Image (cartoon, rainbow, N blue to C red; front, side, top):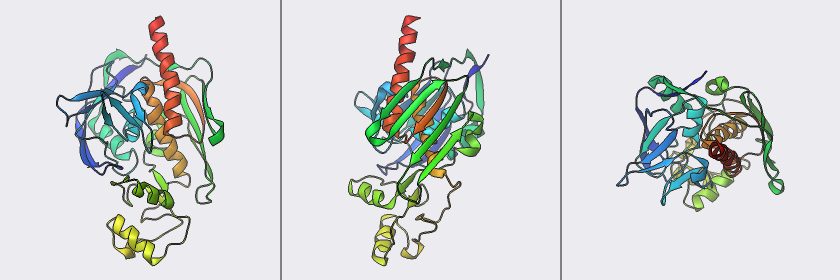
Length: 309
């Protein structure tokens, strides 16, 4: 028999949100059994609690956003991924703004703090939801297919497909959450340079910099463009360079880091089902919209089963 968990000691991580650029403080606190993951906006009076469940997803453009009564919290996927990756069932996250800090663009800092806090075993049995028959969500036009199959454990095989040779087709696998800390958690978000320009034009990624994302460059950079990028990222022009197709001074941790990051995102998004899963997931071209659509289907199954019982 397995038992539910929470963290031992509260901790706070702070930084700008990726898209809003707003500096926020996110504090994770212990929570009792069967409370699940709840995010609380503390900058609003009275405070607003939003359960991290699929039915509260309100937007998936450039990240996963949950909301309730018109109040939202965005870019929750790395936080949620870290909790599931560390098998934390219950926690309260207090945030004093509309977006979770992007930190280094991965789940690494979250899992480091969870490990330092310690994980406490509660006296209530952990309940899993087991997939009984294949569940499929697909978008044939965009070549997206996400499949959940019956299994005795949780595993994911994820493939991404990009026409750019800088990424191409990549596959990442997770056979057990035991691999999460070493193989998945530190893999950072990624974007192409031409996408950065579009996002900036739409007043997004105000909190982005060259340390919290892999920026892939698929065209030569002239001095004028280097100067413009230096201004955007508050860097000296001479520090803007391209190495192995990546626009920053950091190296990828893995040759397939983009695929691993997409798997990281998926773990965060599918955790919005609200309970740990026993399923084998096979993903082709996952993204936040597709991930949360699959989570909603499975979440409906969970709710319907609870009603019948």
